[in-house]
Structures are given as C-alpha cells and as structure tokens.
Length: 237
Ligand SMILES: O=c1ccn([C@@H]2O[C@H](COP(=O)(O)O)[C@@H](O)[C@H]2O)c(=O)[nH]1
Image 1: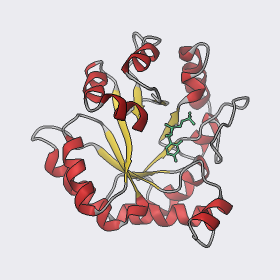
Image 2: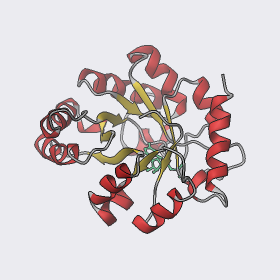
Image 3: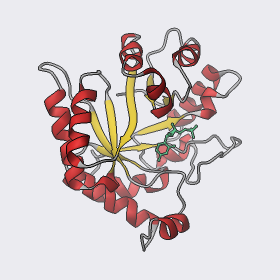
Image 4: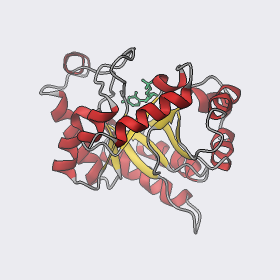
C-alpha cells in the first residue's frame, strides 16, 4: 500500500463503488472496503477491485475468539487484499491467531496482507470510553496500551486518530504503521466522527495513511476533492 489518501468505499453495492472509481480512470488508488460493501457483495468485490489495479484495505475489524479469527483470516488471506484488521480489544492471543491464520492462508509467492489493530474508534470520545467501556485513564493512554499490545502480538500497526499517531510512533516504533481515519478538510461536516484532523495535521503528526470517506465520496466532484486532500498532504511538511 502506497497511495494516499485511502478512499473509504462505503457504498451499498458494487455498482455505486464502480461509479465512484469511474472518476479516477487513470489513477492507481488505495481504497478501503468496509463492512457495508463486503457484506453486500462478498469476496468477489475484493478480487474485482484488485483486478482494476487498486490497492485494497479490507476493513472488517474482526473481533471474536482466537480460533474463529484465525480461521476467518485464513479465508481472507486468499483474496489478495493488501491490508486487513482486527480490534485490539480482542486481546493478544486473538491478534496472534489472526496472524497465524493469515500466514496459513497466504499461498507461496503471495505477500501476506498487512494486519493492523483498531485501538479506539475515531467516533469515541474520552468520556464515552470511560463511561461505556469502563476504562479509567485517558483515551491516549488506552490507544497507546492497545498499540503496545498489537506490537507484542507482532502486528504491523494500528488504526488510531491523528491525535495519537505521533505518540504511537515515538513509543512503539517509527516503522509501526499508523492508519488514521477521521480526516476532514477545515470546512467539512464532522458527522459521527469525534477525533478529527485535517490532512495537513495528519502529515505533521506522522500518520502513515489517512483514510477518507465522505469528504471524497459525497463531494460533487470526488476527483477534485481527492486531489485537494492529496495536495494538502503533500504541502504539509
Ligand atoms: O476508528 C475508525 C476505524 C475505521 N473508520 C472507518 O473509516 C472510514 C471513515 O469515513 P469518513 O466518511 O471519512 O468518516 C469509515 O469507513 C469508517 O468505517 C473510522 O472512521 N474510524
């Protein structure tokens, strides 16, 4: 995965997703296939988008007992996605099982998908986390804790907000990936996201990948929105 931003294809079906991709006839993109599109279309949506030459982050956020996650990852490994993920809250043994499944399901000569762990969703606030998840301490401590746990389990990185990305890199490792959704341009609607940041802040805070959905997919001209975000990212340093 190289391209930035990663476009979240949060659509009800293949037709809508392909409509969006038509805005980018000559560009190799990185796209994210999430639950909505995957549950509607099944594994063929991953192979179809890979066949178009795009990188795919398959964002299914697995969270179950280790054996179930291992077997599911064994199946997902064969689809050709470049990145997959789990919830760090599933625990170290579950994350290790995810990797085991991916290794087992990856054929000889194929590259194992990167595997990252969701820490605290970008739609979660600190007070919500403390009340609803009964986690004491700050949200940034919780994200760091999950980051360290994911590193111990030998995962490749985490999903976190831009606000935690630098701390993760400093304290877990500069080569440990930080994938950051919750990206908004200054005038964009926040929607359900709580811990948001601009593409420029994301770059300054050392995010490796920014994930952008509605700011691109709901724009009147998605290609123009994509390039505005890319330009802001490129000019940030
Ligand atoms: O903590 C997380 C984990 C995943 N996401 C996903 O990223 C996109 C963001 O979409 P926007 O429209 O740009 O808000 C979406 O697919 C989420 O499922 C996240 O937002 N936060």
